[in-house]
Amino acid sequence: MLYYSTRNNQITSSPAEALLRGLAPDGGLFLPESFESAQINLEKTLTMTSNEISAEILSKFFTDFTKAEIDEIVNLAYNGTFESEEFAPLAKVGGKFVLELYHGPTCAFKDVALSVLPRLVTAAKKKLGDESETVVLTATSGDTGSAAAHGFSDVPGTKIIVFYPARGTSAVQEKQMTSCPGKNVFVAAVDGNFDDAQSGVKKIFAECTMPEGKALSSANSINIGRLTPQIAYYFTAYRDLVNAGEITLGEKVDFVVPTGNFGDILAGYFASLIGLPVGKLVCASNENRVLTEFFESGRYNKKREFHITKSPSMDILISSNLERLLSLLLGTQKTAEYMASLAENGEYVLSAEELAKFTDKFAAGACNDEETLATIGEVYKKHGYLMDTHTAVAWNVAEKLGVCKNKTVVLSTASPYKFSASVLKALGAETSENEFEMLSTLKKLTGAPVPASLARLAEAENLHTDKIKKEEMQNYVLARTEEEI
Ligand SMILES: *Cc1c(COP(=O)(O)O)cnc(C)c1O
Image (cartoon, helix red, strand yellow):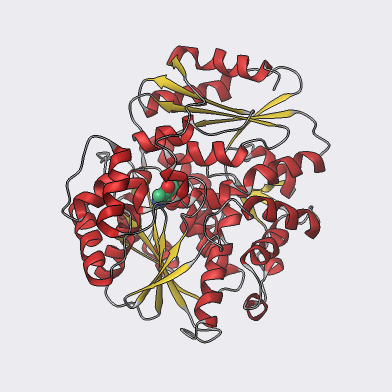
């Protein structure tokens, strides 16, 4: 299997190279050249464990690794790190199904991929005879930083440096980062907002020369190694539906996905390309409706007001992974044109004929904060099921678009306890200034178990106390890079 750039199919890489590079040299994203060679035998998955399904899929995409290597990576990633027995259990709620992707170490769905990515990266280095130490940099507004820190924690040959805005994450998110163990984990609060931290990281990538034997890398969601581990749970959900007698083998299923950077939902599309019977993939957005408008009108326009919402992990105006879908459906040349237009004019517009290719498989809808909270309250009242704000956006959109033709799976991307203030408000309960207190309030109110990793957070030791000015980020990276661990 080779990978090519979304903007030029003459630019190719081996799987290991694509994993290490992250971005293609022309600024495009990597795409697998063939989905035919990655077909999955659906019937066989019915008797496979979730780890086996994940390893089977990954071995089709990372053909330069042996199956035994992939098996080991998957087992190390998931065994003992997730609180649930399965990394993606399926719950029946009313007439729908909820795919719970939040039972990992930081209680958000990013754990599923970020538990695998670090080990894929180290295996890729070994494959290429690259003995350098990988220094992973991440700027985070919350979820990515803690998931990356936990994923890379004590992975040999790597260091992970997380920068977060000193004012800008929730107290729970901050503590998840500052209490993350691991000799190779460095976390620093930057005096500024998320944009300051992010531009600082971009500047370091552009300007910083690393010492001999060290290489910079990023953990953000454009890496093909973050996308591919997410395909597995679409298959495990399908397996569970067949095995529970809810559908027959071959029957189509619709998936509704709370979407930001378009990585999660794109993995669903990849699943359909390798043999999963998918009806519609529904892209659910919050008030940042840029994707909803794209699927409705063909116009992607990032020049708009940015809304800070109660589903903050979806507050995004540039959904990077949409570029991969453009390239698959319209080809590399058109994609290069549209991406240039997005950079220059802040927008691009598809023709009606082009748009039809997207709406064949995808549908979209949006939901505001008020509707989000109302949905949490209603679902709890009606079904006794507690969901977080991101999941509620998806549930609301699923209801709004009407009864889907097929059985519907709503992807649940975060634990309700991770956003307890909003959830308490949705249930009409009192909120407090203290987020840790609200965990117990929510527990008392609903009886739903608090994830162990969040329950111990209030008492957890602050292992990382670095506070730096934004001008100091580069020096911080160089100093941590030189540090013996
Ligand atoms: C990152 C995130 C999303 C969005 O996922 P994308 O792959 O970026 O579309 C949704 N919900 C939660 C809780 C997240 O952390």
